[in-house]
Length: 190
Image 1 (cartoon, one colour):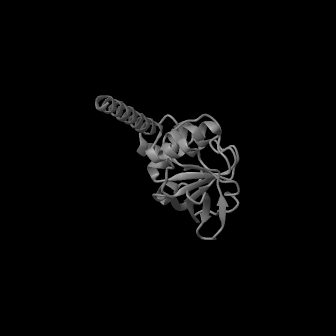
Image 2 (cartoon, rainbow, N blue to C red):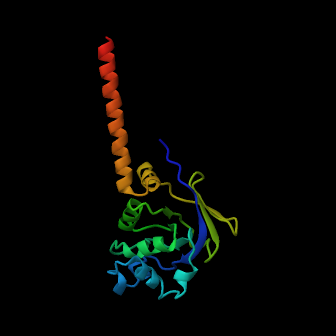
Image 3 (cartoon, rainbow, N blue to C red):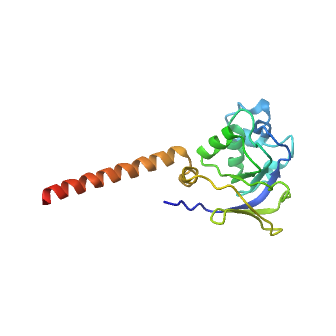
């Protein structure tokens, strides 16, 4: 069963020029223990752009370099980004722990070599899942991205790993029940 994901389309709200970017820096190391999402969103990216929270729009995307998300896989930074409306991250590559953690939260991550050089801040980007390409709408440039596994696609479509597992277990239980009913009906008819 192939899962069709809705395309992502939004502005490049920020381009992280650093490789091995530690996402804790998005909210600042001193703020990673903040649990109030509004307070966390208010400090997001203030060391880079004090107006970031006010300028980001629902559907915007982040662009990262190589090994984006390096470091401890803390979740506050990306929780804040999701709260602000950021729809996903397109990067040259991701730290494996960050990738697994964010995909399991249902947050789209797209590995697209060359994206950083092909994008300027505020340019409009589209992730076309069916074509397997990131399209810079403003320049017309297109880059292929690394495909997600069927489980990763299913996890994103379900909104996270827990909903994905619940749906999968429900399907399997329904299939077993249908097979048991068929066996019972067949035995009774015979």
